[in-house]
Image 1 (cartoon, rainbow, N blue to C red):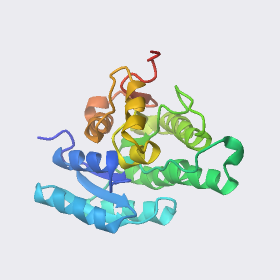
Image 2 (cartoon, rainbow, N blue to C red):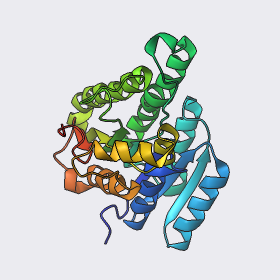
Image 3 (tube, helix red, strand yellow):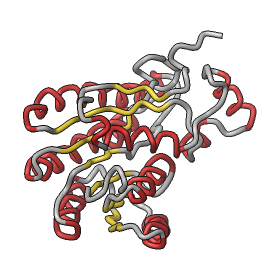
Image 4 (cartoon, one colour):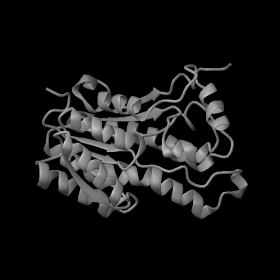
Amino acid sequence: MGQLEGKVAIVTGASSGIGRASARLFASEGAAVVLVARRQTELDRLAAQIHADGGKAHIISGDVRDEQTARAAVKAAQQKFGGLDIGFNNAGTLGEMGPTTDISTQGWLDTLDTNLTSAFLGARQQLPALLERGGGSIMFTSSFVGHTVGFPGTAAYAASKAGLVGLSKALAAEYGPAKIRVNALLPGGTETPMASEMNQTPEDLAQVADLHALKRLAQPGEMARAALFLASDAASFVTGTAMLVDGGVSIHRN
């Protein structure tokens, strides 16, 4: 029996990277998964893979910045699979980067909308459904950037990701008595399309890998296994945490 047998999960940002890997892993561990992202073609491909492996998946194609998308995902979880147990609010963007004085107000707002406000909207819709089930788990994909490490040129990204840590702590305190656990997952450098967008040459990627104590980047599946832990009963006494899964980048100094 899988670690999520009989559970129902929503995964946002499911079309690639950590979200895609997590959705496949959750499904392989027995969860019915509602896949949320903007790219319909990629979601169709992922759902087909999950179905081929004997899992259950349903697609919601939409923008996580629109609360209607979050509402539709919860409705699908309830109507298609009977309820909701896990909300993995993973969707995110690098946003506008560069010297802080050059970042536009709109660029700042767009980054916060995608990384922070969308997670709030997702949780706001997920919480009543989790209460109906008598508890559950909500997770946010934050980052070590803005939490343990500061990088020049990342003001909007760092602020939005740090905000997710604060949001998780507030919700954990508010909903702990209702048996809802809320945690933030803080990945280190991971080989995803977003990482490639930020580091466009092999030399750049090698430099980022060298920042980590393990001297490499993570694979998305490694982050998915950490998310599985937080989603599962193995983390039954874990809430309000900013869980670093960062290959030692936060403690490495040479």
